[in-house]
Image (tube, rainbow, N blue to C red; front, side):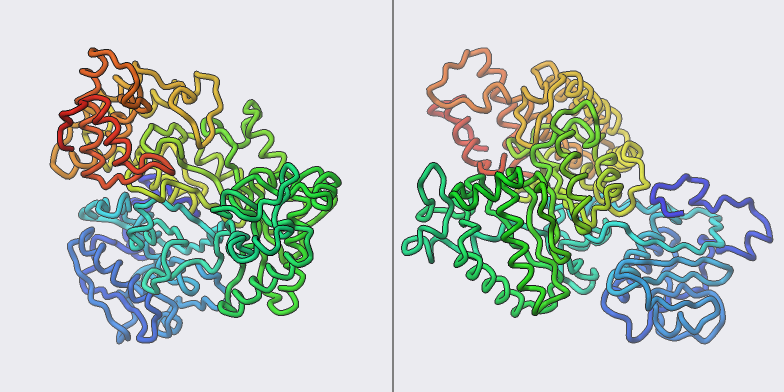
Length: 607
């Protein structure tokens, strides 16, 4: 059984008290005299796994087990890692054929074994053991739910193997990026190279690359023909390649330059499993006669791009046959070409940036998502290595409520059903405290690791454990936001404005009321601080009527009076929770200063 979301009966062992159960399983409430065995030659992540198990078991059971390297008796051991003491013990096993994150957990009378492949399998096995058999929940970086084991907890016998189906699991929220220990607990394998946490997956995220591989600042002045022709003009002298130009992909010199840059990068990183050769982040692709002819033949601008990427990949294969050359299928290049196929050493990173945030990717009633599904089906027919870049963010306003929790689970299931090798969920990497970021982070992390989980149940679990008595009004507001957004009949993307989500002032007041009630129910300072952080989304929605106003805008005295305390509270929360950006391009202080002038004129308060 692989599900990470297990019934209470299963966690408790689903066995009645009795001699036969005790003979077969282990009473986790009675580990006195046991130890944790980790081999002397264990790698850093295995030693760290043993320390994590020791630390958290002490909280759960009240017993701090000794860490040892060798055994002198047959039973009462928890083996952590695939070292010789485990392999040579009764019931030991070898992991030489395990993948880097594969894990096996065995529980039988007098012995528990948690071991996995190198370098992350054992560490992830420990976290799986703590979650599934002891009810531990890694909610946020500073909040781990650790229930007491009680007087009796029989578990076993168990023999469980797990192979995570996604090789790449990423979410780039600032909360994750700043705390690699927590992201390891979520089994997000893309954040850190620290060996204690098992390092990153070898796969790199395929991303925009041509701006550095053939920069116009180096070649543009002397060779305008290297760059995109748009409306009859070569975009060769620009301020920013990433947003203002693309290379001319049918120019043979461009192919040579980019190929040399790729081979030079691989020479510096000979063990890299993949490398990006991908468009810049704009739609100013080349319309010169040669590029246009390729694109017209293939029915998509991916025609010239894939022809180019295949050519680079052919050269890479000669020197680095193990390396995949990755390219984004993004924006104008999302549609697969009619006849071209990626070479065997080419990977496709399919991006869903145009898709609807409110409906599941495979919802047949959503026109935006139908087109994406058609493209993913097309790529699946011609490429065996497709990953997905999906979006859990509103780039137009990081702190507005984001009513997409119900679609996270079906979307991840859809990607897996279509053989995605990896899933990257882009979040608000520029700043902390996007809307309900901790809740989203928990649900996404758990589902990326194990897609058998239930998204609604995970969300409810997080709310109940993290906010305790204050959870109900927050849950009710989240459901109201979701229902009102769906009822609007709209299909907002990850650049949606408040009106595009169906938000209005009545909903904003409901949010303020809900979080006001939640604060009154918060039963200690830690919970109160969590509720305050979550309330940022309600205050951001409440000040929407003045969000875009400038000093020249007319503003009624009544509206100004109503908005002042809400604006002040929003920016005080921004300061407390280190919210440095309010959208992908705008620093918080820029909006704060503008609204001070709009609402207070010459005498703005200090916040």
